[in-house]
Length: 77
Image (tube, rainbow, N blue to C red; front, side, top):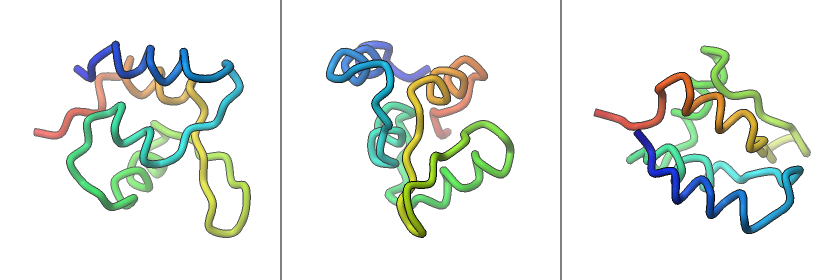
């Protein structure tokens, strides 16, 4: 299970409406991969819903991150 301290740190550093970068999400989920492909796979499975700010710019909401963690995803084996 991802460390709650990391998630709380992300939440305490900004307001509730702050969007998270893919790097923030991978760190909070403790993903080993440096690639964003794993986040795209989570998107295809309906676990994450990116906010598209441009053609190649994606951000994620803290609520989506919490939902993904609650679903038990995030730590790779």
